[in-house]
Image (cartoon, rainbow, N blue to C red):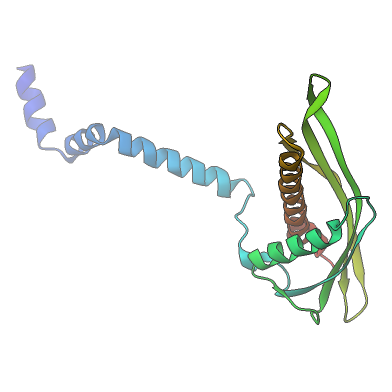
Length: 195
C-alpha cells in the first residue's frame, strides 16, 4: 500500500526527476555552489581584478633614478624593472610622455637570517625607495615612498659564484616587487586628484 502511494504520485512528478538528477550529479552541484560562493567572495567584497587598462595614462617617461646606496648599478636595474612592469600593464615608455616618474633608492641591505657553523647560510634583501610622479604639462607632482621594505630571501650554500648568482636573482625579484608596488600605488592611490 505504501509502495503504491510512492509509485503513483512521486514517480510521475517533475520534482522526483529533479531530485534524482540532483543526487546523481551532486558533485557537479557542489562544485557549482563552490564556484558561485568564490565568485561572490571575490567580486562582492570590494575586490576587483586589475587589468592592463587600469592605469590612468597610456604612456610614461622614466626619469632619473638615483642610487643612494653602496650597491652598484641598482638604479639601472630599477629603471629596467620599472619599464618592464609598466609595459606589462599596457603603458608605453615614451621620453616625451605627459607623466614622468623619478625615484631615489634610499636603502639596500643584505642581512643574514640564518647561519651554520658561524657562517651565514641565508640572507634577506631589503630595498626601499622614494618616488615622484610629475605632470610635465603643468609642473605638478606627487611624491610617494615605499616604506614597506620588500624582503626577499636567498640561500648562500656553495661557492662564492653561486652566492653572488643567488644574490643577483634575489635582487631582481626585490626590484620587480618594488616596481609592482609602484604601479599598484598609482592605480589605487596616487592619481585620485592628480589629473
